[in-house]
Image 1 (cartoon, rainbow, N blue to C red):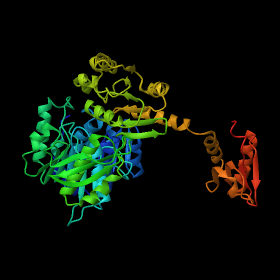
Image 2 (image 1 turned 180 degrees about the horizontal axis):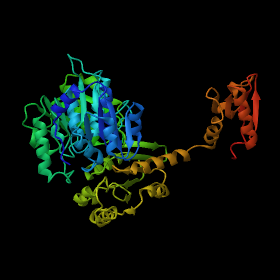
Image 3 (image 1 turned 180 degrees about the vertical axis):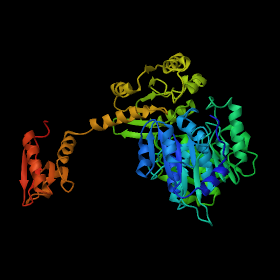
Length: 564
């Protein structure tokens, strides 16, 4: 498909000239990056239409704001919307019927990054770039700026539970355009569409080799990106390639554990290995800048936080305020996301799908006080699995038990030399035991059967393995319910919202002599219907009960419940 090429400046001008209420059509609207664009456009007053192969939470969120998102791709969806611009994600194939319809009708077509870069031109842009850690770092930066009272705009590549939405556009003030934090994707060669005021560059690695020829070409992309950053660039001194690219730039500063880092990380006084967070110090030159604490675990998260601190400090924010702003951040969805935890087990969902990310995440989880680390991994893309097979084979060393499922294709054609079973054989060849489970939906049961008290479980991958993680966490939540909790849930379904229902209520609070043990369930009905429903409930189950006072309070007593 011959694309109608527009650069960010032209797209910005096109949108500025569009009549109020004009439509922009998103092909692949359900992806996190594309749905974020939808929120930005809605904030700016545009109508949003689009399509995707399936409905998901991102689509439903856009629809709740008035967007019209179709399931499936059809040229008629586009023509009916009469858009002024069509935007597509990198996951969309070139012969998509909606893109072909746009070409026939001469509607401008751009990639996702071009529109995002165009919108960033209206603000004081900060790009967060790098192969690993972009989402966590950009989310932390947006969260910190919000806590610092900056009211930033942002576009994050995942849901962030502590932010109301993962992308928003704040109308610029003529005198102060305001910050706009962008997670800048390098995977499809569009990194250099951005011209930010500031940038954080976390790392470079052998990734996206289905697009880039080699690591040298990746470094070339990041060098050009650095040239397009107008004010300040913050880079990780622990990455030798970044140091080579950026260390001689007058406007660049470094951070990291490296002794030559401008903002140098040192161990802090906190952090006991319990998973309660991480403490660290930063030195600026030879002087102690301050001590900081984050709720996330692992050296990589400490490094990412140091990048945010460095940028904020260079931007004039006080150290104490920065420390308070970052302390309560608890991460983005699917980035070491704890789905379940009790005194028996922990279950995590993690997006890691590159060997470097996997190794760092498993090392961080090892910091917990745990007996065993159980890992289930879904490879993402056949091309990545093939290019990085030797590295994948050795990146799971921290796992006590390992399961590998089939590759999540992400629109790629199946290749026999890079399947999940091939990867499992490579892991075995490295000397580590592994179980291959072809069907990802079978993983929750397989892991549950293997779990012992004290185990930590992590599901890893960028595909639909997240559904298995949530299923296992859901099972564990159900398992830990006591008989009383089960009973409370069943009874509460019969009651009005106004009714009060408590477990283990002390009888001394309710009796004249202020004596007695606890009632298993205590009910204050809000209506006769509540009382009648509770009496039927007790009668059906043979549960003894006692009526109290004029208000007809009902105490369900001991004995009849514990034997259920």
